[in-house]
Length: 386
Image 1 (spheres, rainbow, N blue to C red):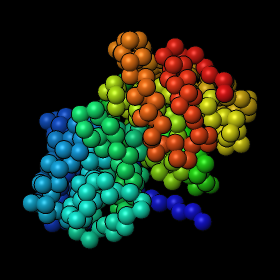
Image 2: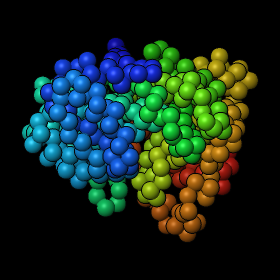
Image 3: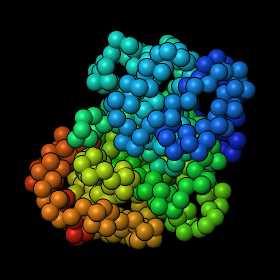
Image 4: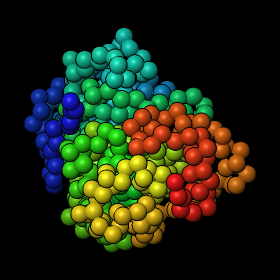
């Protein structure tokens, strides 16, 4: 027995106008500092006010959102008492909205209780709505939230089906101004979500359908979105939908070793999430191919039969896409990390990746030595045979 969990989804040009139709008295918008300063929240605020709501904006979310920021936002939510919480932004803002929503609903819990084994029973005080402004994280459709704790930046990989939004609003007006580098990073994240979920032990017909459609769309449209300026509106809309589909795919099948390594590397060296998981996606394929050959073969209608016959050809297909969009393929390309710093942090990187929940449904269980081998390969960019 399996479950496929998804929010209700409103999509297409003008989708944001849907907010005006919801019975709302008090709404709290959760966004990052840049969107707050740029006033990107104003179209959302306008629609909520049309519904008759008073609106409070919490615009303090940082990249790799920290547990202390959850506390700050939660304090505001408890004082304001919203009946609607809107996550507006990329993955950081939407993850923050999930955490605030859960702990606002359940003041008796701590953030460490946001796990599948705790009965959260949310939705008594408020509804959660997610409005993505980038096309990549898929956080608008998933029940996971990544929150950072401590000075070392360790990531808490939290998840519960009650954290999924009641509504995801996919309006292409929001990602329309994304710069090429951000478009590439977020598109790489969406592709990693799709391919990792398809090869997961928990993959299923519904998650595969979403994942394969997302892979097809990303390969078709991501180069156009990165190279074509201005980007045609239909290209933006296709990638925005693909990111949500990728979220539905991995949200119902799990990520894998690529994200485990990406989370570890990003938290230690403060590298954007999409860039790190994109860096490790070819190695996810090479490591898992022998154990998930039949699962990877499901990509043949999208990428071609010859591409999915062996690990090298499939990972080369991804590396070719990275070349087209200017995506980094080695650690030195992706970061300013020196070889000395890399070597010093290597044991910590291995330890963090080894403890990641991203490995729970991975097709193979890696050893510490294999994780180190992949990390060293990512330094040089050399393919790896397993």
